[in-house]
Amino acid sequence: MITQCFFLQGLLVLLVSLFLSFYFVPFFRAVAIRFNILDAPDGKIKIHKKPTPYLGGLAVYCGLLCGLAVGVSVVGNTLLFLIGITLLLFLGLVDDLTPLKPYQKFGGQLLVVFCFLRSGIYLKEHFFYSSVNMVISALWILTIVNGFNLVDVMDGLATIIAIGAAGSFIIISILLHQYDIMILLCAFLGALLAFLYYNRPPATIYLGDAGSLSIGGFLATVPFFLKWGTYNVYGYLTPIIFFSNTDCGNCFTYYHTFIQGNSFL
Image (cartoon, rainbow, N blue to C red; front, side, top):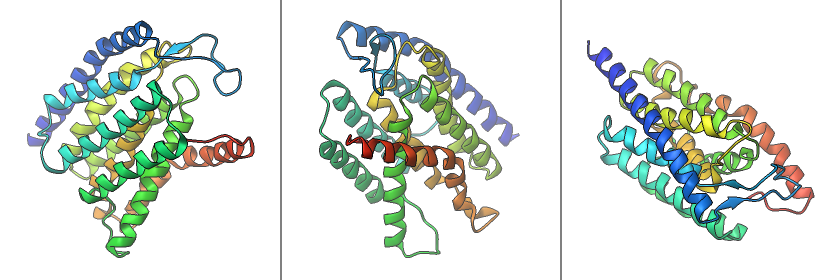
């Protein structure tokens, strides 16, 4: 009976996030057009036919918060987690409005990673010393965050990857009986599903750096809340498997970007 209540709550959170995001996306698209916050094609990486508005990340973020408002008590680590995601959102938004230099953007990411680590949001496996876990966690967060920033170059690609990862983590959280994490992920999934409707080819709005950084940060850090060792001591390797295709693709993208002399940040 208690389990059914959690499932119903998760469904409610998903639906609230989904339907409200259907309102938020057109709203932020109109705002982006009004203030000329557009991604113009450059004929190289950006090959879309006409300027496309940013601010899709803000729509996903607002949908997530509205979903959480009806289903999750935002206290303790959950609050610190959301603060970290918000910092990444603002970092990306600044980059969307006034492009940052690579070292400035990376410096901002390092600051957010430090905040996550200080908040206790990092890998906690007994195979390594705590300091080693922190280093691994920092590298993991930076890799996934920048990975999502890189794959956000095709209509719907980053969104579909995020939906697949969120859905997988929902299943894992149910198997581990961590229903609070399931509800958190349901709010995230609902917002992504609504955004995909507008972001599918041909996209009418993009995530922008605000979206790709915050979504990458969400998916990089939410695995730290899951009890991977419940059934298998090597369960913590599961997120690496989830993102393996993305990471392999990013390696080729890093290499291609490097030999062209461009920054991948």
